[in-house]
Image (cartoon, rainbow, N blue to C red; front, side):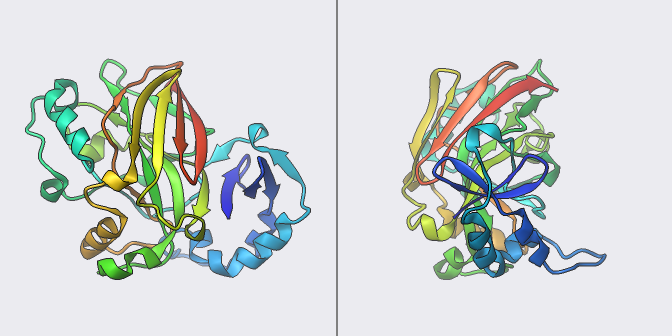
Amino acid sequence: MRLCRYDDNRLGVVRDGQVFDVTAALELLPAVRWPLPPGDLLIANLAKLKPEIERLARGNRSKSVTEVKFLSPVANPSKIVAAPVNYQKHIDESRLDKGISFGQDIKTIDYYGVFLKSSSALVGAGEGVALRFTDRRNDHEAELGVVIGKTANNVPRAKAMEYVAGYSIALDMTVRGTEDRSLRKSLDTYAVLGPWLVTSDEIPNPGNLEFSIKVNDELRQHANTRDLIFDIAKLIEYSSSFYTLHPGDIIMTGTPEGVGPVKAGDVMHVEFEGIGKMDVAVRNA
């Protein structure tokens, strides 16, 4: 199933280039009171809602995918976990390119661990990226986004994939500089997720997916998730050993070589095997 959030927070199923409106299924979500439970209510209850979502998608009104504004398919993650330098060739280029490293000694993900991006940075493909600090280098980083489906704490690697709800294309945008990663990567709109969520049953081997990004007509990155240093299971095991992962939490798995700057007026075209493609416009804030 390909599940999206679009336009004025409608819920949709994407099939054959059409978005079928299944917003009525949200009426089955449990009522909640303050304090709200952590995580995303839809993702937490996705298995329960799936039969109704599928029923509504049959014969319901639809729009072409070209007619809708895609928002992030996850509305309320409690956290966005990100993996730094998780491809060897990106480590290599970071050590050579002072515009990336700012003269710092680039180490490995084993040394750094993961970091957090603010959930307020999250947007969908249709919302675009609004650049800040345009006197500095603002880079694209294309990667696989993993959405957690149920509460995970101290999860062993052998069971880690049982906690995945699905996958999306992710852009971990960053301002280059000397500050901590969490600061430079948490600006508003600097975490793009989309264009939809593909449920895990449709991607049996997320550890072998081709992906690429073009900026306008220029190919910048082309890689495969098989080259991840910490694979998805390892990232879930590692992250959940430090903090509880809640339904809807997003893991951005890291980017390969080829990162580069973008400017206002650019369009980032990202394609991911098994998921699809998304176009993300760049503007100044």
